[in-house]
Length: 70
Image 1: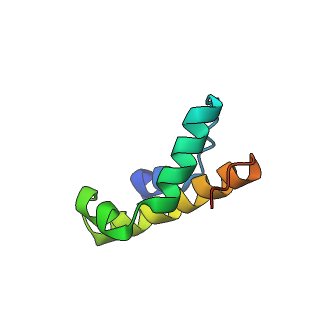
Image 2: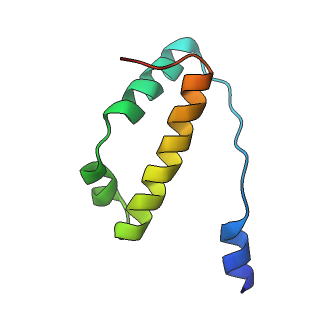
């Protein structure tokens, strides 16, 4: 494995504090954003799927923090 591949395979932990209104808005956004928007902003289809996976993890973290909009 090259050093670039090793760098991308390492997990990264991101921690942040958000005011209630921003956390709720972010939870609404990750619920509503569609794959077509991800594809439009990604460099290729593979990156779009990586973004989708990352957003899924973000959405899970927001749910655990009590932000699960219906």
